[in-house]
Image (cartoon, one colour):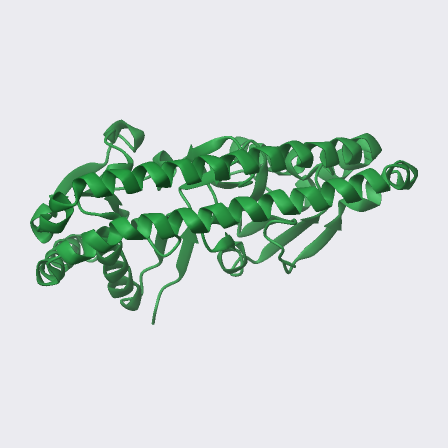
Length: 366
């Protein structure tokens, strides 16, 4: 029987620039294998094959996707074995991860001839330059979209009944938490929605589906979703529960969803970015707005909503163009890959992980 597959983004393209949560790929790891000096396209192949193999053996697998190109992977985690394979280019700082973890590095340079890459280095440098220019323009449009988004949020916040929001927070806390738990506890920060070359991509709908207790916050910008999510996340942490915090891809200081695995609870927000109607107990924050303020500002809000969508869509168009530019570099990597050696590397990694699996099994059942 196959295990579950969880998909997340450890980084995001945001209105504040590139935002990274690589150091939260997983807590409580026993082994991290850094895969060194391969291209992302080559390392993705390794990570996908490893993930598929162990998922079919019944393990839950967590894939960490590249936000610009979700088909590519930065890491794969075999959760119950607490083993992660990570592209070494995303971090060289082992202290980002847990102190009790073991580290290994697999150099896959020999899988790449780098003949075509070296021969076309000047041309590839020019491609990198064009890629950076295009991505910087994309960031600029996201930043402008966020400014307009703030205008909408400010009007809604002005119309919001804070007293009713506070009552909702208390009632939600009482529904979710019956008891406390002892340590260990930790917080994880990641994205489950991202701006990408494929448009707005979200994995939230598949990641929360197996949770028994589901609460859904419905409301536009400025209606208090982050306020509520932060409150519940902090309450869970204080009570000793692990909390998974998923951030808003436009403005990472805001929260999109939280998951509390220890008590099988998900608190999700439905918004204009993920555009999902989640199952669960529905909480409508729009009910706490002063309608007279909204009606008074309707014309301005309609203009802002339209401009916001235009700016987001243009930013996404530039991301798609950026990926097409970068695909030219990937062509040289593909020509340089020795796929036989890549497959041998995968077989070697499978044997290494299965050896650890066997040791764990013997320790549990001596």
